[in-house]
Image (cartoon, rainbow, N blue to C red; front, side):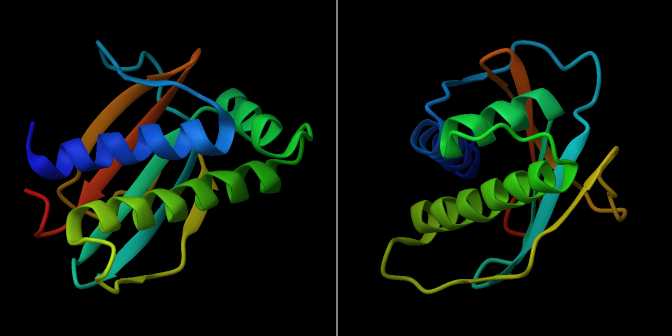
Length: 145
């Protein structure tokens, strides 16, 4: 596993454990069905790329419940939670890659339901089992080959 994959995996595990007390494990086989909620945001500088997060609605609702103590039936709240996960994950990942003293810039996240638009990019895909759900991380850009 390349160093960026290790850093991204560790960043996801730390983020979900701290945000929602969830345990993350690498998925042993690809998901049978694609996750239905997604968020993606640009990594602007000094590393350029795009980080995407996909997860199923039930897992997003559990994440919101664990993080806030409130049930999340509102689809917009679930999309916002996945976008916040992507933002927090990107910051933690870049700190691991660049060090905590390096400044970086992130763009604004986009979120939605269904299949995440791929925009013709060469995505690196990592899948994780999180409790009974699935999280898929996607990373594209010249720094992540």
